[in-house]
Amino acid sequence: MRSAEHAATVDFIERSLHTDLHLDRVAARAGYSPYHFHRSFRRTFGLTLHAYIRRRRLTEAARALVATSEPIIDIAMRHGFSGQQSFTNVFSAHYGTPPAAWRRAQRFFPLLLPYRFDESEWQLSRAGSGLDVTDRADAGLLLPLSLAAVDMLPALDVEQHTGALGRQADTRQVFFAHREGQGAAAMTVDSATGHIEYLAVHPLVRASSVLSSLLRAAQDRPRLSITTFRDGDSADLGHRRALLRLGFRPAPLRVEFGYPTQLLEFEPSGASL
Image (cartoon, rainbow, N blue to C red; front, top):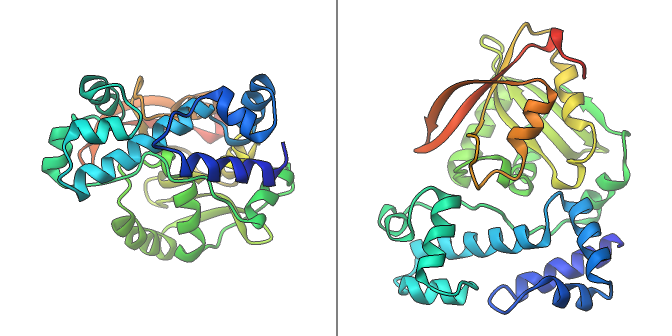
């Protein structure tokens, strides 16, 4: 499938989140067999159509819980769930709290934002290994990357995150992978501790070796660490597994911004990247 076809498919899904969306219908709308469409969607975006739709529906349901007084059962039914109990089970598994408690807390963060990319972003998927890694990037370059890769950043509050990015770009070591200025991946590292305080990889390049490239750029450090999802977290699309595959090892459990996470540690000198 071409980028324009994927973009049209995402637009169709976003317009139809409150309708009966299933693989056969979306594939037929795109003009492909379910088998071919499933493979192409997953290869391009790094997740299945089912996972994309579920996370987008949960995100919009979470937004409605905070922004409206609409009954929970109505929100559940409007976002494609068969009833309040099934909605509560799935919502709790992904957000770590039941819908009623989420509403009382009046705090929102997205699981996934729409995969609407401009042409320069689509070019990333065609760049292959042709990405440059630099040690300079400001918050203006990092924020769009964060929004595209929001599923990597547990409990992301956009307003707080924007301020934190500005501070990190000024005070932390930055590694920024890009193609002609279009961000593909980035991480910031505390020079004193080696802790990776920020890591984001654009969905269109997650199948590439860009994460290894960032870690190679930081190989002069004796040790790196990062906080990520705990084992078994339903909100994790595979980011923990990707880090473990590169050589990170589990360390203490943590809670950050009220969200259960885990520290992973990495020794660049002993890794094969």
